[in-house]
Length: 127
Image (cartoon, rainbow, N blue to C red; front, side, top):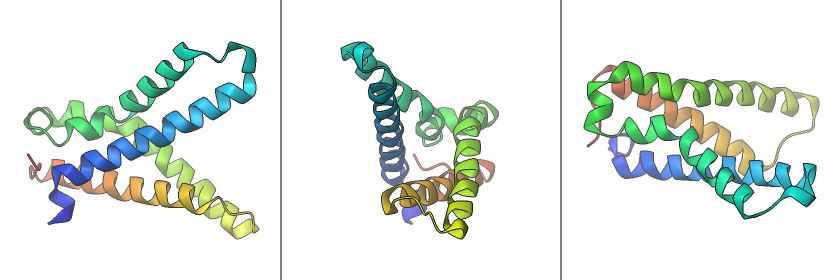
């Protein structure tokens, strides 16, 4: 089944990490163009990867053994996705929707995080 696939979870985690890095780098270059350098790029990439650490770990035996730690690592980004989906719905209702790519990233992200929480709870971690 695709939802239990380690490759699918890790691919979505990489895509979300890239999305977060892209947003951070876009904001950094607009806010402080004089301070934008190679270290900012490295920090943005690391920020994206660290934000997805819980989803990466949830697909390993370590994640299955330490479910509470894995869930705690996943919680901040999951809450960010929930808040973003609220904003997504309110912008659609107001007639000012986000781009299709942003909508897809939010919806796929919340779906994968939800499935990962369910699989962790049921101890069906895909390894």
